[in-house]
Length: 242
Picture 1 (cartoon, rainbow, N blue to C red):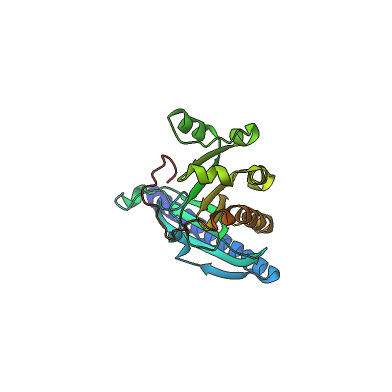
Picture 2 (cartoon, helix red, strand yellow; picture 1 turned 90 degrees about the vertical axis):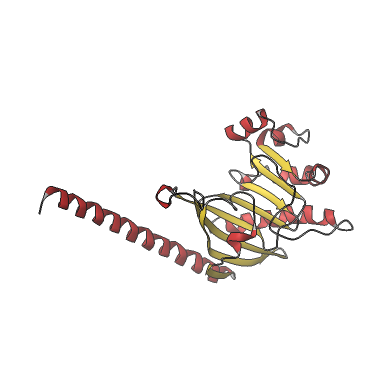
């Protein structure tokens, strides 16, 4: 056996081992999630294709091979909550498949409802967000220095956003449970996500925070126009939001 053939076999073996190990690890994580669901009275399913297509803002609506797996459904403080690991691969449908990026993951916790309007998007104000503001990205300020310095706020309805971001909601999203996460309100849907896979050790607390936000925001629409259900937002083109 020549050196080149040996090298090819070695590389093939490493790739095969890596793929197999990744599958075993994923299967083990899914078993842990399923066991948590059984112990805590939640419903578990391996995949739900509809969830990967329900929302349009980040992390949804971008990339390839979008999958919602390790799906958990439960009721928290009277609200139907869904949690799942969302995965996608960087790239576009017209791109060379060999140039697709690495698979990315996000742990999503949300009200189990169809999205609509109005929309409020809160993202941690990091370096990227500061650059976006420098070049004119929308940021709703509420004259709360701590909140304004931590969150970049973009919305389809600034009047509604200012009503929603009262002292109660501003204080809630400053809690540690929201650190490193992104919060989006899309009509009757409240969505909280952060990079990484499902973490059942924090799921109870994060679910309660989603319910807390819902209790403040959803009643604001009572007596006004009904939410418009659907996965897209016509005429809503805020730079950097989708």
